[in-house]
Image (cartoon, rainbow, N blue to C red; front, side, top):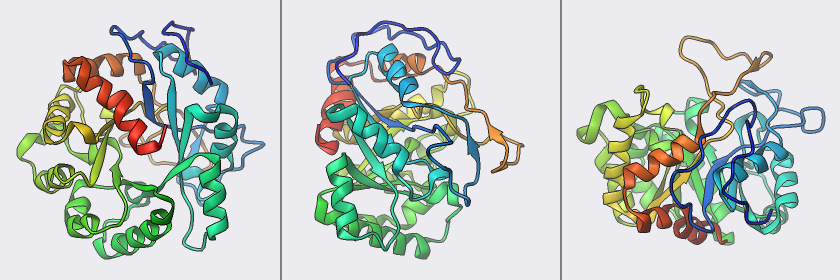
Length: 306
């Protein structure tokens, strides 16, 4: 995947994405995407909570081109469990412009982890939120086991968890031998503002340099059409430590819908988020080209080893 021009290429998975209205810096990275399918080649886990549609590598490349992005981080989605084959196939085809975050079990061998490193993996994901894990003791064991796997390779661990769980584990996270990345605004609720419970614990982890936060999927923390309250949270996080912010689109936008039960045997449509609009919104929130370069280029390059 070579540097891709900042030109529109039409709909991606049926969604028209707005073109960026600012100069996207060279080397800009989308730090949170998924690839799904083809399903007849990459089988979904029997234990999945939902059934995604197909979001193929060709679709991802078109998405990157539309947004003028040069680099990408593919994150293992929960419907594949610990079978990283789909993501690894995409990494092989994308080459040095892509990195990955894998999911492995506690029995993964050193040889398996080394092979993942060679393929472009730079982190391990723990998805506590989707799995419904709210017990800090259970989460602590998972964190410590995963950090022990990641540390020898210089990887980070990426956590999707509720802000209250993060706060309960503050001291544990501070003592881990690896950096930590929190998905999707660390589940800070936009409507609750800067004084909400547990936010201080997250900011402490950012101040110390221990934790990164992905400014991704504001739909998951904000009910406003323009996600303005998520923008206020983004500004608070930027003030805490601008060197610990990342941006991700969350393409192709899987996720539950309010009031609709998830069915692992029924195809769940992706959300139709406009990622060009999301990128423009981030630029307006930050209001500074140097800060945008940190978020889109420098911070990902440091963390993922581009």
